[in-house]
Amino acid sequence: EAEVPLSDEELGLLAENLNKVEELLCFSEDAPEGFIMLRENDEEAEEEVYEGFEPFLTKPLEGKTLRSYLTFDEAVDEYFSKIESQRQQFVEVQQRQQVTGKLERIKLDQTRRADALRSEADRTNRCAQLIEYNLDKVDAAINAVNEALASGFDWQDLDQMIRSEASAGNPVAKLIHSLQLEKNSITLLLEDGESDGDVEFEQVIVDLGTTAHANASQLYQKRKKHEIKEAKTLEASEKVLRKAEKQTSQKLKQVKLSNSFQVARKPFWFEKFNWFVSSQNYLVVSGRDAQQNEMLVKKYLTKHDLYVHADIHGAASCIIRNRVGGGIVHPVTLYQAGSFCVCHSQAWSSKFVTGAWWVYKDQVSKSAPTGEYLPTGSFMVRGKKNFIQPSQLAMGFTVLFKLDDVSVESHLGERAPRHHEEQGESGSRNGSMGFDEGDHDSSKESLVSEEEEEE
Image (cartoon, rainbow, N blue to C red; front, side, top):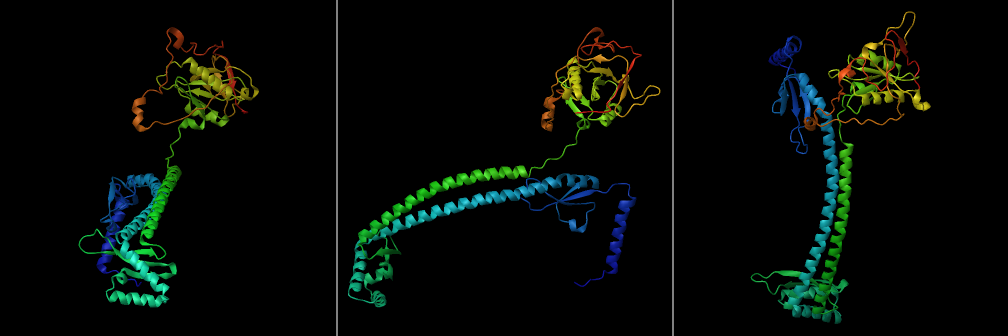
């Protein structure tokens, strides 16, 4: 197509609008609004289907269904957070239509077969009734044709003679509509003896080799065969439909499963470490290697947390999160954390049972003694260690699940840590929060090292 140059007025409007857009994007302090276009006439979709997004209301958007947002960022975020699930929904609708469409075609085919057999049975019964209403006339027509054939009439001559006789008003010739002598039969025009008013004739095929009564009997027998066949067809159709419905149901489940769209959740910070939740709902975390041990202590060990370790090669640094009020950690949690620490050491492969110990956060330091160097994942522990009773080398699996927003209110507080309720001096810094205490001078120091961790 030939290019049509813009007029001076159109060029002026274009330049003016471009300047407005530049001013909005570059100089305006307010963020532009956002608009999402919705797909029109999408009745199959269960929810609104997005078609696109724009920062301005341009001419092409006039007349379209839109959703507006305070900022363009909000519109873009909403669009891309929903568009993938909407595409999956659209694909699922199409696949559902294909699966259900096949079932509907099967139902339609079975219905047509049954209807055809019913119609044939009704038609056969009607022909037999018409012959019974006109027994004498039918016998007369059969005898007339048989006598003509016996006298040596040519088939074509006989057909012409019947037409001539019918035109002349012969009542028997008027009954004969056509000849099928190659099948030894003729088609008659018979009327219903019980009809009132205008007489309507129907075509009935009769056999020349039998009488009118015999023809009627044959038609009744034929009707019974059609009815039996219809019943068998309906029974078989029910089986076919049940099987097809079962297959359709299975395919629909597969369609739903294959098109299920799950928004990836953001992992919690502790999921990159080894972790579990104790029986009293305390989060216990340990490093997987020396680098993670270093990160865990430096970044995540807080004021009220406890540090757990074991004097065996490969034991990881383990912390018990105690951030809520800094209450007393339950002994069962300490026992479980100690077992967790030992199981992630060389004791697991060696089947060697030993105990772990715990200290407070301010007893753990990265400062090495003069002249010494602490490698990655190693720390200095100063002061008294609180030893934990040895336990069996046994671990289980943690299943993490998330409640639906509707159910959150019904479960508030269920995962809150349950602190140990003790009296007197049990809550002091020197109290017995473990099962066995080690008598160490606070001036003594020990090195916690995880230079080589074996599994």
